[in-house]
Amino acid sequence: MRTNRVRLWYRLHRWSSLICTLFLLVSCITGLPLIFHDEIDHLMHPGHSLLQTASGHASVSLQSLVKETERLHPGMHPMFVVLDEQQPTVHVTLSRTGNGDLSQRVIESYNAYTGARIDTDVPGQDFMDYVLKLHQELFADIPGELFLGVMAVVLLVSLISGAIVYGPFMRRLEFGTVRWNRSNGLPWFDVHNVLGIVTLCWMLLIAGTGLLNAISTPLFAAWRADRMAKTLTPYRDLPPVSETVSVDAVRAAAQLSLPDRKLTAIVYPHPLYSSPWHFLVYTEGRTPITSRIFTPVLVDARTGHVTSSQQFPWYIHALEVSRPLHFGDYGGLPLKIIWAFLDIAFIAVLVSGLALWWKKRNGSQGVLDLGRDSNLNSEVSSS
Amino acid sequence: MKRTFTWLEIYRWPMLLFVVITSGVLSALLGDHIWDSLSWLLLSVPLLVIALCLLIPNSWRRAKLR
Image (cartoon, rainbow over all chains, first blue to last red; front, top):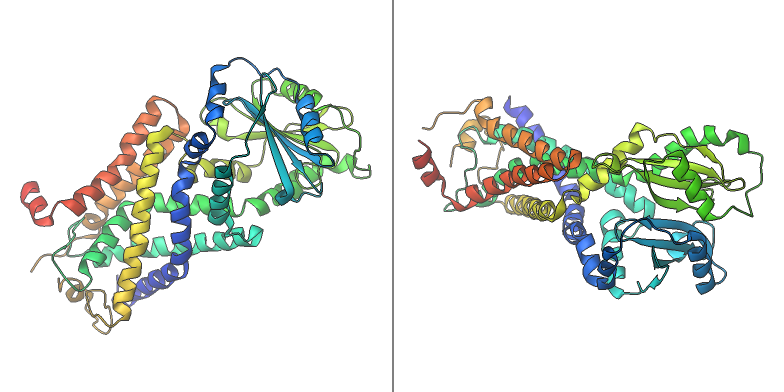
């Protein structure tokens, strides 16, 4: 590769990295506890693990749980009923305003067999929510999410340009060389190279899946505009439903239409989260791969009949798979531990990169100076 | 003066690691049980490589490998 071109890639690598490093440090550090989200939740809710002794199918009436939740929080509107078969619990979410503002929500959890309320009012829950909010939107809602999406793109540029300049810099160095005994920032340089190239594939994965997660809101909007709109055409002139069938009838209808799938959530009629005329039921498969793939079922809120149970389009499937691939929570605790170590390596790549830039900025003329010398080889081999 | 490595020599380890990590990531996604274990095995490879590179001096590695 010509030296000019190398220098160009090198600059691209440096500037793209500088742009996103600060935000990535926040993401990597908050990501670390998020990998163990489930474990931390279990620690904070020791009562939940007791439920695992129960077995069989959930038999308690969902409608009665929704009624109970409405009684506990008068004047609030039911939004979602989430069915957690593994715990097994039922979570009922109510919203204060009913206009879709989820910041004004309450969640009550119940034992799926006995219907007994589970006390979830634990301070630790709020802390993990806080960490997640910082991780995925920097406390800035959808603009924050999209901004981090842009940072993910910048990270992808930085990773690819980094992989390209790795070659010229390693022409006289064996793979994995770390010259601890050298000064001039060389150890930083070597550590950055080794950690960066070894974890490259994983970092690309995290950047790509992070990008997909960041644009999930517009992706769902695209799906709604595309497929949902077609399905809902016959309803367009109808007023939004006021009286709905019971949520148990919705569950039964959805289960009947897709008997092999597990129901995971029921969304009440709402123009943003379902449709003004339908319950939206989320179902998932029971094998490792199909459990990542959700199929939505639209149930007419007035009649209780299934309107549509067609598959999501490919871009929503990609989104669904990108969530576990981002957080590493799909292959047991050992995988999470590996994910954590890789995350620490990622942090080390960021810090060593920052250190290199700082050293160079302060006038240290080490191997990194591609400056005026047209012969890159002599530069790199000055070690 | 050390000789210059070719493109293939420089990128063969990174490419191998790329394949190993991709297989590890997919293995746990597409299967359970044995596939999860395979994923743990494959994904510890990059961590092991990092540990080796950082902890074992280059000169020692060279002497042993040749």
